[in-house]
Length: 71
Image (cartoon, rainbow, N blue to C red; front, top):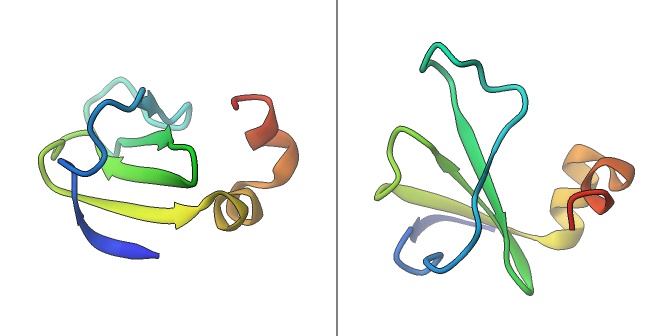
């Protein structure tokens, strides 16, 4: 896991806003799947840090069934 990674490393990815993020502009998280890792960022701080975890770690976090539908 790398929570200090710059978003410039994760450029060229297709980012998805969490379905749990509201439309009020509050707590918003975006996720992008790379070939070897999953990247997570704050949608209000796009140039800010990106949390990077393995695909296996992400599947363990959200549950394999929910992630497999997206990838």
